[in-house]
Image: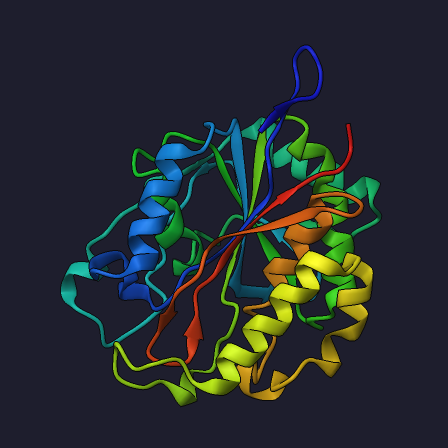
Length: 269
């Protein structure tokens, strides 16, 4: 984080992988990384989280007030369903997000019947367990177009200058049909795609990456559907022109899920 002006503080946008819902209960490197990340980050004024588990035709924004902890999964230990993350959406943050989307000509709607899905509350609870930072969740766009999500992130760029954390939560690779036993060595296709994406993030302009994603090696295996990768493009856009990508975590789970995380530093200012 860097000081931009007398009353403005830059917050580096982050992409994290949230893994399976029970990551929050397991002894796994990604869980410990997220816990430590929250302790080492400067404290944000607010958080805008984009998860791979909410898509809509137009951009939707959660409401002012208490946000429900949504347990949008089944078949996990009872303890997981008892976890509550009492995040609040504050008016200034909701209004800032809606204003930024409007200035970027992104059609949007505030909704009152949506809480935080596990792609949002699992990493937030690990990073900021006190739940005292205002939170807004923003939906993905159903077409799952990388360029559209890059633009969505660009509209949020001014919020980074106000100390707001733009947090993308998804997965670097996400194919639930190819899960193996925990501790299984990484699948070659998962490693290959992850390495390709890392090279692109550290060497290509975000627009070139968005346009070239279809040519990525093993894309269909790494992401049979693209919703868990789209939060990365939102974060890329929020970081501004030619962001510097830093991989701050890299681990695998179930042999196929790459759970890497990235921080994006802006070249501006």
